Image (cartoon, rainbow, N blue to C red; front, side, top):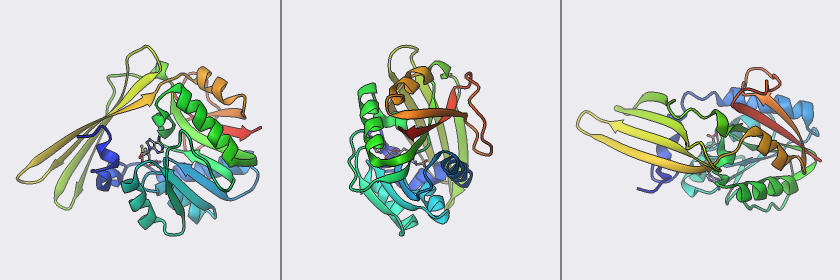
Length: 247
Ligand SMILES: C[S@@+](CC[C@H](N)C(=O)[O-])C[C@H]1O[C@@H](n2cnc3c(N)ncnc32)[C@H](O)[C@@H]1O
């Protein structure tokens, strides 16, 4: 089983796993931050867009959206969900765009899929090039020094007479620039139980390091990881929303 079954063979279950996520509220929050810090434009690029749930809400808010993701099965679902948007298969660590955008987003900690610091720098530079003057890059991130390896998020849902359960947790060894996202997926019918285990390698860094990587290209504003209000980061929380205004 590949490490990223969730985004390939199991992509049809991705939206079930995310059924508890309030995509409307996340998109509204970033839209408000864009109104405050952005240039007033409506061209939007969503990196690691997955099945397109944020794009769906940005289109409703009046944006013209383009989604980029490395896994075509995720994009196939996104295309069905958002026929008004355009999508492209590609690696966010090194992407080039034909047009420029007013807003570039990367949700659900996906920026960490850059895998290592070198690729993360390349992603930041690509996003900078893809933005128009005054455009903004928004994403959320976890600080490696706050990762608690014992915490697990669990979620169960009934679908088509199957009981699905999803468990996800971060793992950070305490050293270096790699962390993993561990996922356990279980599908139970009356007769059988299928189990899958994914382990996704991701880049690990703290917020001081992340701010330093962004600073040559952007004015960086950091907010508490709350989507129903806008609050400056308290410099202690291990999860945050980064709003980066193109210099
Ligand atoms: C946690 S999902 C997030 C999807 C969506 N943004 C959401 O919030 O539901 C992570 C996504 O990142 C994509 N991905 C992983 N590595 C990537 C890369 N290097 N470039 C582009 N997309 C990538 C996966 O295919 C997957 O769709």
